[in-house]
Amino acid sequence: MRKPFVAGNWKMNKSLSEAAELAKGVADATAGLNGVEVVIAPVSLCLASVIDAVGSTHVGVSAQNMHWAEQGAYTGELSPTMLKEAGCGYVILGHSERRELFGEGDEFIHRKLRSALNHGLVPILCIGETLEEREAGKTQQKVDFQIRAALSGIAADDVADIVIAYEPIWAIGTGRTASPQQAQEVHGAIRELLTTMYDGSIASRCRILYGGSVKPANIDDLISQPDIDGALVGGASLKVDSFAAIAKACA
Ligand code: 13P
Image 1 (cartoon, rainbow, N blue to C red):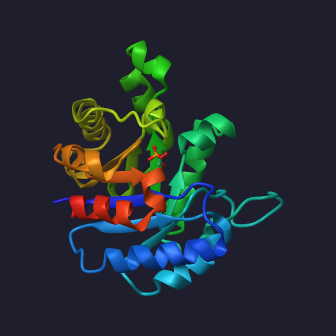
Image 2 (image 1 turned 90 degrees about the horizontal axis):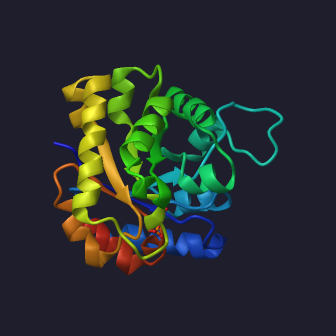
């Protein structure tokens, strides 16, 4: 059985004081929910204060990005050892905003993923197609390519612990969600790909999240699909009530 997983990607939102308050609110509102792993991803400036705010509660904290090196001349970057020392357990890698707006390529994402695993951070690997790719019937091709590139040479046991987030780019921040059937079709194909690349037991352990305009109103239909194991939530994670409602629906 895969434990459902709900992560809030706060993107470039919330100041230091706002972030600590939201984190506390999430910890309180989701207290006692045993059947779901709850993770929040504030901006890097707020990681330490959010980790402090959630303390020893059930809420995990994720970075939104990282460099693969442990230190060095990489202006503006954060290293896996820094994240670990701060108390982060997870890191989002390859978000479409990093890929599309900041030019991050598959090779970079692969190096980051390998480094995260080497440093004991759980990677939340994001993949997904553009609207043009979907309309051209190239969704699966794109998603397969991104997964193969990111996981190239990664040991099977490590792959089972990775969280994959399928986020169709056309559904992010647009209010336009993939239908549960559209999402399930891609999630099912991702699990088949993992079965081909590794084996059925690895594929059945790996959690695959859906992301893209997830709200309390659409989470029930999404989470009821057999291969959707949770959600990576953007806008709706910025309010305690909506994020907690999504976590409860997945628990
Ligand atoms: P929205 O939920 O705002 O569409 O964002 C999704 C996302 O990009 C999460 O990483």
